[in-house]
Length: 154
Image 1 (cartoon, rainbow, N blue to C red):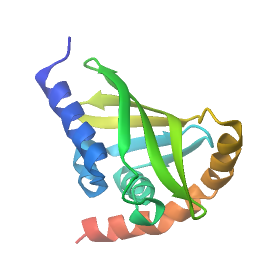
Image 2 (cartoon, rainbow, N blue to C red; image 1 turned 60 degrees about the vertical axis):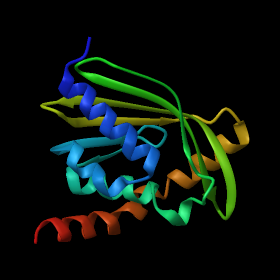
Image 3 (spheres, rainbow, N blue to C red; image 1 turned 90 degrees about the vertical axis):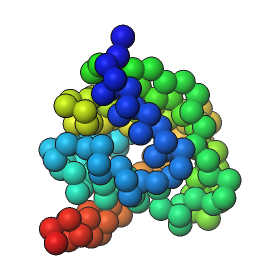
Image 4 (cartoon, one colour; image 1 turned 120 degrees about the horizontal axis):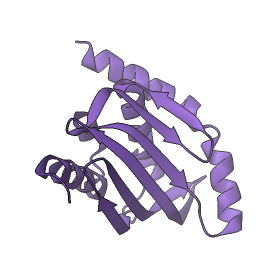
């Protein structure tokens, strides 16, 4: 059984993902939130860095009008939410559909304080390509993180 606060947080998260409205995601995070991208084992720490990482992944340069998120399954309790989904993306100029996403977040005081995203495509060739692309991901997110910090410090 989940509390109304947990259910409201999960509903807001699912709407943000469905609408690709990642700019609103910061409202759902604690100040000391951590986001770990499991295939590369990299962890972003703090709200600005997490928002920077998530807004790069939702950037329109990596998506087209067919890049919808398709939620396959999700469940929650008062402490965690788990979401399994598929998503289209543009990788190296080629449009691909990536299955095998799993997003696990810990909830504290009506916000997310820890998030892990597992990306494990079922296609072996795509798994190798995604792994190679994701290795550059932390470098790509630094500029977004700096912009988020600058915008929130005003």
